[in-house]
Length: 415
Ligand code: ADP
Image (cartoon, rainbow, N blue to C red; front, side):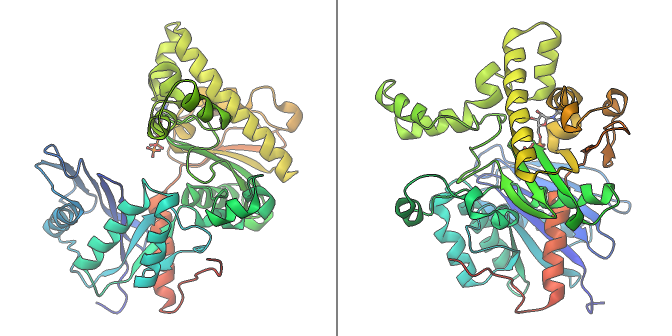
């Protein structure tokens, strides 16, 4: 029974939350999913959903959970109650989402002390994310020291970007001394969706050029040529690029000097303004596209403005990546807004027939969890809705690595 353990626990550790999924890679099925939120507060909450057998049904616990170690212990107890305990010999590995892998980690990597030290060295470029990811890994190591822990990096898919796309046009010595360059994020999603889009077209990833639009609360676009990322909209941090739920996306950097010199704001205040109080929320007070559409239907001008700014930026990136790729086979919409907000998809593509792009309003209105085409048959470029599945992608990459055996940690050469 222990000859071929096939379960993978996927952990996505945030500063005050842990999301998890237990998958069986024998058939890619999900055994349980859940999250712990508000870790460290009085109002912590664990929501656990077993997905197989008679135990199916959501369980919720509201009780203080002091830290990540306590959170993972609580998760382990829930899984045990379903007969899916983390002490099971069926568990092959734990896969961790790690946000920033810098230039060095170009592929999923088995965690060693040295790898952990490198992830720690990247904290200055990912101060919000990497510390939480490190805590998650350490906690899981303590729970199952015998098990491979695999780090799957948000930045890895983008390490194929050519230097001319990754470089900012600033002094090279200063940039290199501080590792300032465009790294890109959401890579696990861009990788998964670009491959799934090729599959939807019945082609190999090497044979298609895709523009992927990952529109969640955070949002990013990528240009993928033959399965390799050649440009993406997020940069040193996930602040650059598209208009997002609470982030500004592209902005003249001089705005920050102006806010310091003229408005007297501190660096931290500007950080909060651009990351938490901008984007859709800054423009109209709401960051949920459903609410924004409802307000537009009631004639709300601010909501209309927010929608228009959001869509305008999106169209600019579609145009830019069309030019970067030269030939585009598909534009794929994914994540919360991309998968659900038909008006965003319609407005982003409207009037681009000259580029071979069009949306069929009937197909666009269909709701489904399956990858699907929404372009009319005559259109030269496919427009698709392709639901993302970052957890499955992390589990796949983790399992592929441990199945390949030790010494296969696929670490790139650049420090
Ligand atoms: P995250 O970046 O947090 O993973 P998601 O990919 O889950 O985000 O996307 C969340 C966003 O998706 C919400 O803020 C909302 O704007 C949008 N969204 C979700 N469902 C719908 C829907 N039915 N219609 C329009 N927008 C939706």
